[in-house]
Amino acid sequence: MITRIEIDGFKTFEDFSLDLHPFTAIVGPNASGKSNLFDAIKFVSRLAQTEIREAMRDLRGRPVELFRLTRPRRRRARMTFAVEVLLAPAGVDAFGTTFELRAQRLRYEVEVGARLNDDNLFEDVSIRRESCAPIAKKDERLPSIGNGSPIKYNGRLRPFISTTEARGEPKAMQIRQDGVNKHGRPVVLSAADAPRTALSTITTAEFPHLYALREMLASVQFLHVDPQASRRPADRLASRKLLPDASNLATVLAKLRAATRTELRPDGVLADIGGDLSYLIPSVARLRVTGSDSAAEYSFDIELADSLAFSSRVISDGTLRLLALLTVLNDPDHGGVLCFEEPENGVHEARISGLVDLLRRSSGYNVADQGGCFQILVNTHSPSVMATLQDEEVVVSDLVSTTAKGRDRTMRTRMRGGVSDDSAVGLTRAEVDGILRRPTETV
Image (tube, rainbow, N blue to C red):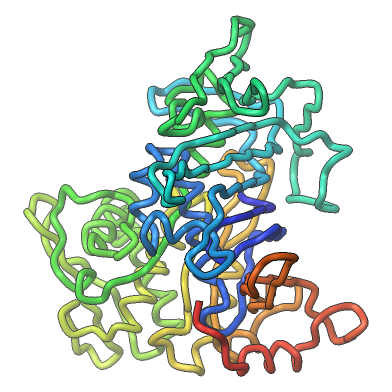
């Protein structure tokens, strides 16, 4: 899980930091930066997997628009990110090699820079600096994490990635070998206009800590359900992991049924998904997948309590959003981080409390579990959702004015936790309600 994120120079973020819990709800009005936070997480996730230009293409906005606007037609030429993570204590790489970690708490930092031409226009982007090092127990920011076996700390390990400099400019990125009995020279990559991160080059458990970090960041899942796409039949060879738009929903449901069914439970985990859907929408009686295991495509329908069945083609948008979410939550292999925007969309107000409770119960960590943690991050502008959240789950997002010497007035995103009944300790719920109803400036 991601326990902390720091952002500077990206979209509406300036000197920003936020601690995250297994279930965190970002609450704020529209255009306050909630989606920008998800974009920042997505960018770090993509930088761990691919080259920088490809990572930028997956985000909302043109590449140049990702850099913070500091004055009219003037942008920062650099942006930095840092994430602190809790990793599972052991794992298996893509080639079946098992590994154990000597340190489960890591801090990863990356800086992206733009090269400007003589007219001060953006010409190119590159990775400027990168680092990854274990977090020592004495430097732990959180008072307690997880349950079960103690977390492994190891402050004696040298940084796994570091950037060397010459005359103040990045020269090379070094990747130190940290596997069992690995004591060779570091792998050295040029930092001159680096097109991708050093982390993205790690593909095996030869570098166990970096491999575990890369896989954790790569596993971050974003759910932006497209009802039209999720209604359509899906090819049986589609991805086993639910795509962000849920266009492969029918195939994922079919494969989950095939992987989990038993003689006593012929529908396998589909029965659980259907049960959770019925909990949120009482008229639902059963979820069914249509199409045999040898079919070219799969589809699904929902049977109601009166025995009437409705195909995916006529199911409401809200029901499809819930079904996609419940499919992720009930997948036995789920893990990592799930980012879900506006869970209230298409959901009857009377069902919101049940939905939030389901999200809360589905998230959590157990450091003794090889799966580590399942972290759920949502954002919302709904007072109804806010009313169902516990104080420690709430992070309030709003925009504040920023001015500095020689600079025009700009807006930056501020996020605050610490909701409390005591106004001397933190924001009260009445204050949060006022922020939700406050008009916001377009950014």
